[in-house]
Length: 376
Image (cartoon, rainbow, N blue to C red):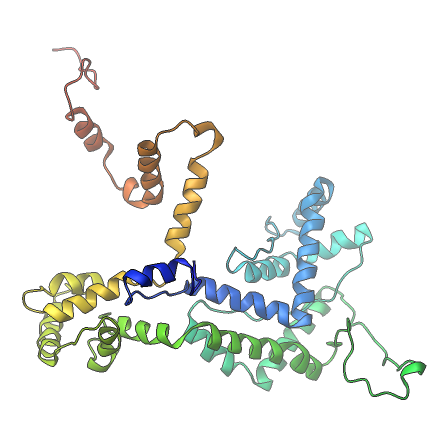
């Protein structure tokens, strides 16, 4: 779909050169976290351990029952460990939280099962907004944050009687004494001290995340998003001429300064009345006869999606509907059921009585849909 030569976006741009391809922002943030975890060996080992622990308790019914019994014995709230997945966003954070909440039960079960226990590593959380994530990650690159994380990890180890692993210095092999070894394969840094945690795990993870965020979100998308934000009444640069020019130039439109001045006065007065809340309300108030170019810019901003989650949910709904038991279903019926499943919130708000009445009035029927009571 994203191919620039023969993908969907390339075919669409052949007919509409002004079309914009924006990768799903939520997916981009998830890829940033996944690539960071794979790039830093210590972080990769952490999530490999979490996945191994999850498999240990989920595959075996005996181990899962023992895990539930230990939770009840320790007075912990019954909960399950979270499986890691590349397609489930934020599963890394949920997996770490689930492990921390059930760490006592996990340790007790592993001790009784005589299973080797891996080291405990802490993980910083990330937010969903790109700009906030970037600024937060940059501000976290301090010695105070490293000390805080180290103390938290130390407290967790002390509370669960996890002894620090002592590793001696590795000696160079005799056959390599005449050579200078700059790197090794398969080795991991020992995270026993605060300085080792900072240089081997924390700083590499932060630097990788910042690099991924800067490289994955393109400048074109950022400029368009800035123009879209100028159409949002809650933004600080609402109806800013410079910001609106970014999106207007892309669609080969020119925003008139007079329209912006009149629209600001008009929308400010309507905002006091509570009639302006989002871009949809702005578009409804900006009549094309009065604001021809500005209404077109807001309309273009409304058509650019930030995320493709809704489209992907539609595919998931279709997979659940079109099962092997419904292979003979017609296309029209499948289409209608898919709309009802996708627009579930709007469907739940409908009055069933009104739906039945409208269905009964479609055409005359041999039998009435509702039985009438006896006459008194």
